Structure formats: structure tokens, C-alpha cells
Amino acid sequence: MVLIIRKKKNGFLKSSFIFFIFVPFIYYISFHHHQSLNIPRNETSLNLYKYNELPIQWNNHPRGVIVTLMRSTNHSIFRIINMIHSIVLFHSTNDQFQYPFLIFHDQNFTLSMRQYILSCVNNHKKKLHISFIRLNFLTDVQLPDKFIRRRKLGYHQMCRFWSYDVFYHPAIVKSNYDYLMRMDDDSYFWNKTKIDLFHYIDEKKLDYIYRSWYDEDNQALFPIEKQFFNRKKSRTNCIYNNFFIIRLQWLYKSGRVLRFLHELIRDDLLLREYIGDGCIHAAMLDIDREVKTEQLKQLPYGHNHHIMLINREGPYFNPSMNFSQALTNSCNQLIFINDNTTEIKRIKI
Image 1 (tube, rainbow, N blue to C red):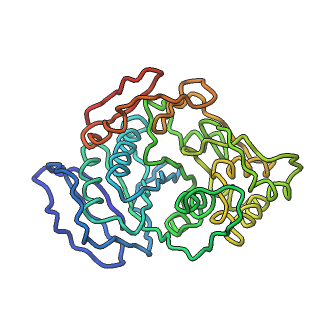
Image 2: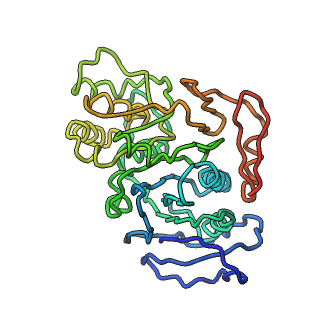
Image 3: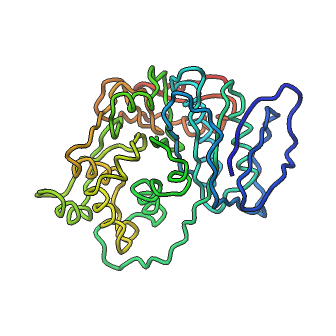
């Protein structure tokens, strides 16, 4: 389903919308009183398996899309509202243009959850384009008794999603986007970006931009990487890819990278073994010797308690004890931490 959010001058639309099963539809909502988030358990999940192009006037803007993956929980909903607030307020674009959002969710996502998110983000002057897309996480993969490293299966599925599945989802492919930006539900910008990030990657003709690195051992990835370049030991340097922007045509046309990804999804390796998607992205950039990348050390980005301070190479962990609790009030304010103090910052929406 495709949603366009626009303020209205006279009153507000009622919550009883026309609903066409399995067919994308467009409607407009306006501000209304925010009630407490109360999710009926007997609501049916939303689904969509046909995709139409969003009615966006791109003008001279690159065809960029902001993508996130959320859980059907109150906490994830509070965080995703906060993330959207931060982009609307701090992603510096010209002429009030707003790039579209794709919110991927599981089968437990309900109409009440969707309506709550939309009611909270509808307080901005910019017109927002938001699509909610259901994913099927059911799998019959049998986990082996012997493995190198393992986390919960849902975490393995998330790593596969950001390593492969998202790039080939019909909502991405059929819309002919040029660039895809990842922002997790607990990601946020904590100050003005000072540049339109999609224009930046487009004008500099880059293939991939990111903010930071992190260290993680990946024994399960090592045998695959050895097939593509001369690596003597397993990778430890991985991209902190809770934020990244990728030029999709680079990925689709890079034969070596595609062969690498196909090796990872063959026999459901990414579900049977834990391989971090940040390490997979780092390997992708190493495998293609002609890829053009850039680390944006000036980008004011945060991911939950991890703050990317200006010109700092890696993330700084801020141990603020009240940050998660503060996010329950994200409907009417942007909430973030942006330095090495535990002070929580708020901007009223």
C-alpha cells in the first residue's frame, strides 16, 4: 500500500478508510489527536504484493529512496517515528523536497500501528511519501547441530535482508530507484547534514557511502571471501552499515559482487550461519576493485546509543540510561543524544 501524507485545512479524515484487499491505494490524512498506542490483537495483518510507482515529482532530484526494517512492537514504532522526524528536520534538501520512505515489516503489523505512525509524522510541513510493505519471514530452513557462530534466526534473516533481499525486492526493482539509503528504526540524524546525501553521491559519481567501521570476527565468511581475493585470515573490519547509501546499478552490474552474494545465499548459508551484513558489505567493496566509495566523517549520525561524532572514525557509545524511555514520547518530538554527555536533546514537532 502506498501512502501520501498531506495536511488538510478543514478538519481531518475519519479512520474508516476504504480498503481494497491486495491492491495498492493512495489516501491523505491530516493531524488529529494522538491517543495512546493500543493495538487490538485480533486485527488482521496488512499485505501488498503489487507495486505501483509512487506519484513523486522528482524534478532534478535523484531517484533515491529511504528504506527501513521494523518489528511489530511498540518500541520499534516509537523509534521509527523518531527516525522519520530526524530525516525531515535534519536531512538538508532543496525546495522542501522529501525522498520517499519504504517501511518493511513482518506479518504482525496492523492497521492501528500504521495509523499511529502516520498520525505522528503528519505534523511536518513537508509532504511525505510512505509505503508499508509486508515481508514473509517464514522459513523451513533446518539449522544444523554444528555451526561456526549463531544468533537468533530472526537476526540471520535481517542480515540476509540487508545483504541481498532488499536490493531485489519488487518494491525496489519495479520503481527504478537510482539510490537506496538504509536507516534503521533506531537510526537518526542529530544535526543538519548540510548536504542532500542523494545529490552528493550522484554528483560525485560514487557507488557507496557510509559513516563508520566496526570490528567483528567472521569465520563463516572466510571460505567464501578466499574464492574472490587473496585473503589470509578471516575479516575483522566491517562497515557500520546501519546507515549507507548504495547506487543500485553498480550492484546490479558488478559481476564479481553478484557471484559473491549468490555464494552466500546458496544453500541458505546466511540463515544457517551468522554472518554480519556489515562484514558482507565490506567484502563487496573489497571484491570490486573499481568501486567508488567514501566515508562521511562529517555526517551527524546516531544509532541508538552509538553516536558518530564529527571527524571521529568509529562510533562512541553513550550510556544514557533514559534514552530508550524518552523515545516513548517521540510522537510529538525528536529525541536524540549527540555528544559524550548523557543529556537527552528534544525538539518539539
